Length: 138
View 1 (cartoon, helix red, strand yellow):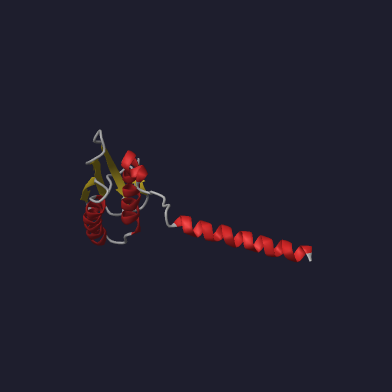
View 2 (view 1 turned 60 degrees about the vertical axis):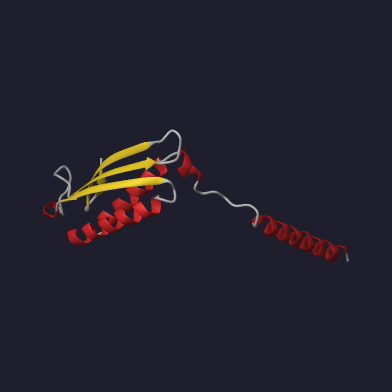
């Protein structure tokens, strides 16, 4: 009899805690954009990873050029609500598409991330040499 009351009590307590947690969950939310408001290096790192993936996964130079243009427009639209401006300029040389380091890379990228509302306004820039065979090369 005691074991049955113990089990019923534990089930009741677990149900009560679950109901309280579900009720409080509606009033609490994790703000995942707070790191972006403090430091634009996170946004720059993510953009670098996306560009590297775009270049290394493409089979042809013309498709990669089209994808980079689409990525440029997508990121500029995505960064506006976050109060950032992302400027990407790239130079593609299809004649060097299958080259390896230390020869000249097929893709040179210039990234610039600027905050518009964070005080003081910040600007982070980076220049990348990307090979479709090995990715970003230091």
